[in-house]
Image (cartoon, helix red, strand yellow):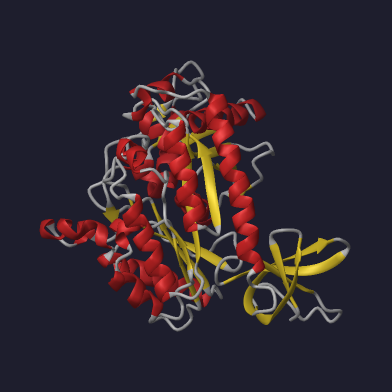
Length: 455
C-alpha cells in the first residue's frame, strides 16, 4: 500500500475533481495522508487563473518534492494545460496530467509507476512525463459518491467556457463547453441523497452554458439564455430528498423573466445568486469582452428581486483593469452603491500572460489597484452587515454544519437558505447535530457575520 497526499488549488470545480480523484485512489487501496506528512506520492491539482496561481502551483509542487525527494510528484490540471514548457523543464514534477485525463488518474499513475519500476527507478531521466493534453470531445465523466463536507455536496454539471473574456486564460486551460448528461447528474445526486446529503450546489466553469453543446448547432443562438440549465434544475427538484439547491456563478444575461419566474416556483431553489459583474462601468466591460451592459446586469438583479423575497445576491469585481480611469472607477463605485450586494469578492487585476488584457495599454500600478480594492472592500463590509441586520427579529431556518466554541459558549454553526452564516447555542442534552434543520427567531449576532437564532 502506498501513501498518497493530495492538495487542491483554485475553484470549486477543482475541489470537486480532487475529491473524485481521492475517491478513486481509495477504491484502489491507496492510503490518503495529510499533505504535510511524508508520502510516497503527492498529487497537486493546480490552478492557472492568474500568474500568482501559477506561482502557488509551482511552490506546492516544489514543497512536495522537498518533503520527500524520493516521492512521485504528480501535477494535475490547469497549470499543466497552459504551462507545458515550464512543466517539462521542472525537475520536481514526475508525472503531469491535463484537465481532460483526471478521471484516468489512477490508471495513468499506475502505468507510470510500472514503467519507472521497469526502468529500475532511473533517476537520470529528465523532466516530467506529460500525458496527452488535447481537448475533450465530450464531457469527462467523474462521479462523486462521498464528499469531505457533511451537509453540502457540490455537483459538477459542465466544463469549459466559450466566452473568452480578455483577462481570462481559463478557456485555453479548460477548452470549449462540455455538458454532463442529465441522467448522470441525477444519478450522482440520487446516490448522495442516499448518503444523507440534503443540500446541493451546481458548479462548473460556466454553468449558464449548460446544455448548449447537447442541443445541436441550432441551439447556439440561445446559448446565454440559461434554457438548458433551467430544465436541469427542474428535473433535480423532482428528487424529493433534495431540500436545498444552490447555483454557482451565473451569467447575468441568462437571468431572463422566464428563468427567474420558473425558479421561484421551485421551493428547493435557494434565494441566493452569484451574478458575475467584474466592473460597473460599460467602457471597462467592453474592454473586458463581457457580453452585457450595466443596464442589462441591473435588469437581471431586478428580476431576481421581483420573483424572490430579499434574495442574497453576490458578485465579483476586478479593480484596476487596464485603462480604468478615475472616472471609470467612480462609475463602478456608484453602480455598486446602487445595486447593494450581500457580498462582493473584490480582486485587483492580475496580469495573466497569454490573455488579450496582458498586452493592453494603460496597465495600472499595483498601488493604484490595491487602493481601489480597499475602497470597494470597505463598501462591501458595510453593505454586507446591513444585509445581515435585516434578519434581526425574523424567523430563519438554518442547516447545521459544525460545532464551534465562541466566546466560551458552544454553538452549532450553519447557513440559512440565503447562505447567511447563523448559529444556535448548543443545549446541555446535545440535541443539535450536523445535517439538522433548525428554525428560530434571529435574536442577535456574533460579531458582524453570524446571526444567532433562539432555536
